[in-house]
Length: 279
View 1 (cartoon, rainbow, N blue to C red):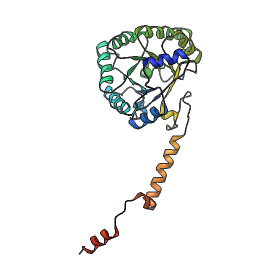
View 2: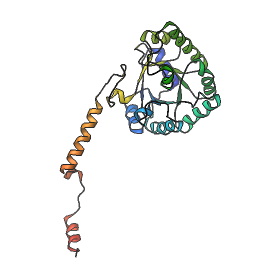
View 3: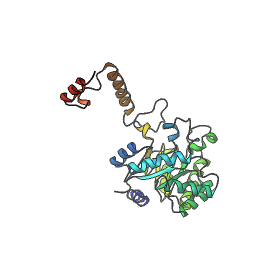
View 4: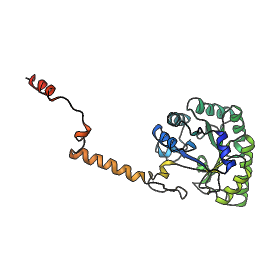
C-alpha cells in the first residue's frame, strides 16, 4: 500500500507504529521498500555516512536532490522525506519555499524535513501553503551542533522540556504533518506524543513515540567507532561485507576467481581456426 500523509496519520490514530529508515541510493531504497518500511528519510546524515564529512553542515540542496532522486526511483510505496540542509530555510521564507519546491520537483520527495521549533514556524506555514508537506524536527537537531556544543541529549531541565512541548504544539499549529523527536528523554517524548494530533517519530526518544527512525548504516552494523546509545544494531552487515571483499581479493590473487562457471564458452572449432590463421 502506498504510504502517504493520510496513512501515517491513520497509523497514529490506530496505535500502529510507524517505521522509518534512512536511504540515500536506489539499491538500498528498493530493498527497504520491498521490506515494507512506511517511510524513507533522505537525511542530511548523508554528509557523514555517504560523503565523509564530520557533521551535516556542509551538505547542500543539490546533494539532497541527487540522493533523493535515486531513492525515489527505487521506492514505490514508502513515503519519501527529504531533509532541508543547513541554511536552505533559515535564511527566510522565500528561500525555504524555493528549496522545498526543488526537493519535490527535482528530487521526487513527498515531504521535506526541517529542524527547529517556534523560530521556523513561519517557514513551515509558507512551505505547507505551497502544497509541500513538512515534517518538523525537535530535540537534538544536528544542524545546531555548534550551538549545543556537541551531540547532547536535550530537554532534561524543566525549562527546556517545557519549551520542547510548546514548540511541538506551535509547529503542529503551523501545519507540520509529523515531527521527529531526537535525543530527548523517553518520558518527555511520551508527553509530547500524547499532546499532539500529528505523528511523532523517535530517534533516541524511547518507545512512546508513534514511530521510530534509524540511520540504516547504524542499524545494519556498517559503521565503525562510536555508535549512539539508541542505535540498536539489528545485523552485522559490515562484517559480512568486509568478509566478502576480503574473499574476492584473495580468490582473484590466487586465481580461484573467476572459475569456469563464471566464464563464457566458445566452440573449439572457432578457436582452432583462429589459431591456424596466426602466422
